[in-house]
Amino acid sequence: MLKAIRNIVLLSGTAAAVTPLLAQTAADHVAMGVAANDAHDPGTAIQHFNVALEQDSTGYEANWRGALTLLNLGELLPDSAPPARRDSLYSLAERYAGRAVAADSGGADGHFALAAAVGRGSLTLPQDARIRRAGIIRREALRAIELDPGHDGAYHIMGRWNAEIMRISGISRFVARNFLGAGIFKQASWNKAISNMEKAVELDSSRVYHRLELARIYADRKRGADAEAQLHVVESLPLREVMDSIYKRQGVELRRRLTRR
Image (cartoon, helix red, strand yellow):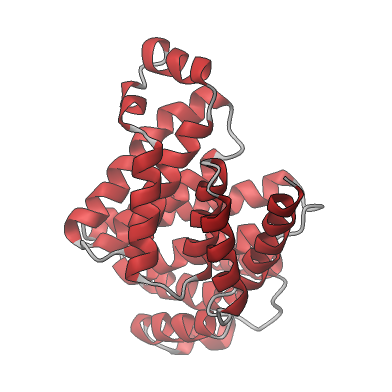
């Protein structure tokens, strides 16, 4: 595992020494990992989560927080990075999230992390593989909501799940439902995409990502004024999370596309 820790350090571009980290308890490292993420330093955060997991590989919080941190590190990689590098981070995130659920099946954050990891890791897979994994994403997100009805992240995943399926062509959805065993696609709708993402915004109105994705869904439904309203708020929100500056740039680009329509 120490070798894996060093590899993650190299992947994230962080050169901090690993050995001194071992002097703290697993709980200490989880707390330091949380603090590093709050400071927008996921490279240092994953070091702490990994050392915590070296001490206790079944640690619930270290696993689910580590999984989400790995997803951020994957998103932060430049487009020029080898795809295998990003895929390895997403695969490891899915492994961590799975361990979190195994450690505490009654914890909403573990199910949320697993839904997020499976979803992110599916993006580069062939369509039939993505279709087979769609059921896992939905199941885990719904379980997170069942355990914590106020989990904004799980509602976000359900909003995006519905939207992504509705963005697939009608023919592809028909094939998925009837020939690939993905009858669950019948559950998807634009109304559910909107209501779930609006719920995520209601639960955490200052999260940039919620409002950006809601704007995208409104844009898909030709609700340009509603999309513009969300993007206007996005511009005014503070940078709470490491990805927020990227999401804000994406919001600017979406606004330009809406203006050109």
